[in-house]
Image 1 (tube, rainbow, N blue to C red):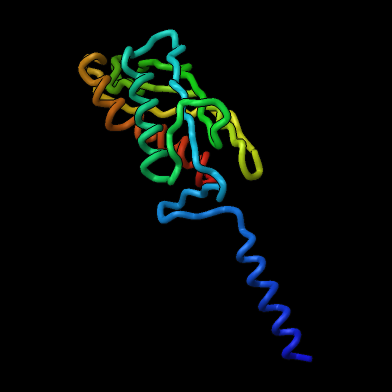
Image 2 (cartoon, rainbow, N blue to C red; image 1 turned 90 degrees about the vertical axis):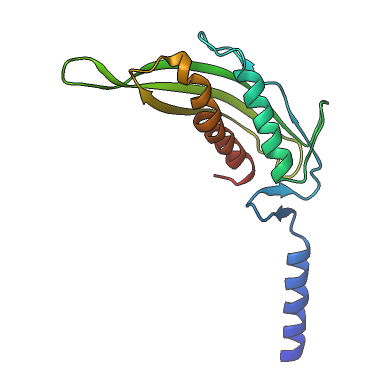
Length: 171
């Protein structure tokens, strides 16, 4: 009787393991087993103030991140397994720190991107969320002199990581 119980438990365990529908990769991305395609649509710039290359840069960085760290293939079609839609809604320079003589010591560039993630496979639980990141720089520098460096090396990689983690790592 004990042998029969152990056999049933072993078969049950094998069925449970074989029936899982989520595949995990070495980078922590959780992709539904049947998913093969993704469409990262062009992220439009709707911010009142904007950088003319921001939309293209963030779109390409997100496409590259998704295709290089998952098995998904970028397809510019409707009805893909996963879809990202978005727009830049905030782009602003502000003072981050003030000295004792009411003069800015540090300035900040802040970028906000709204993303809608659509899932057509698995649990089909998509989401819409705003992602905001900022980077500080010395107020003695002109914003135009540091803007592209802040975007490329600080803000965009962080926002793209946040979007990727929300979509595929359930963060």
